[in-house]
Length: 141
Image 1 (tube, rainbow, N blue to C red):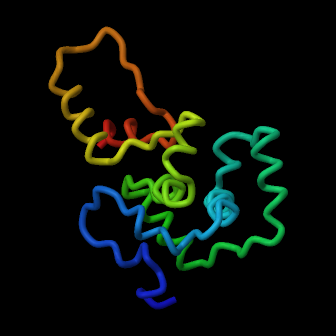
Image 2 (image 1 turned 30 degrees about the horizontal axis):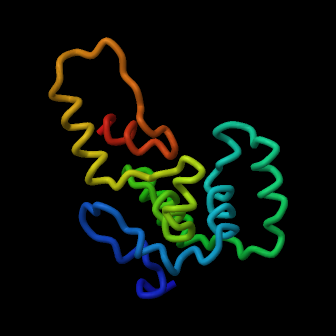
Image 3 (image 1 turned 120 degrees about the horizontal axis):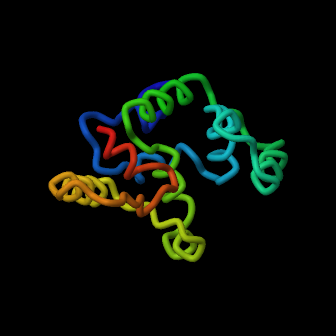
């Protein structure tokens, strides 16, 4: 697949977010779910009934090609959240927020984690998101 046809391959340097880069990669939530399955979502924890229902509905979804799979995997290993970013292009913020999914932009996550690191040793640590682990990944870096 040519670079022009593969938005993730066009990414260079440290990105704050790349929602627009994934606008054309995943045109439906089904394609996004298919990518998560291909990347091993079920191996993290067995699917819930609702997740299994969504996966069963993927019969007519195009499979993830090898080049895109490799790129997504590399981005995830580098600390990016390409599936979360893609989800943000597919579902409007109003709909995400109604279900508790805010997806804090990387710049804000970084600032919050940097601020927390400058504080005294805490008595308690609370992850404000958990979702796709953006805060935990940033703290680990």
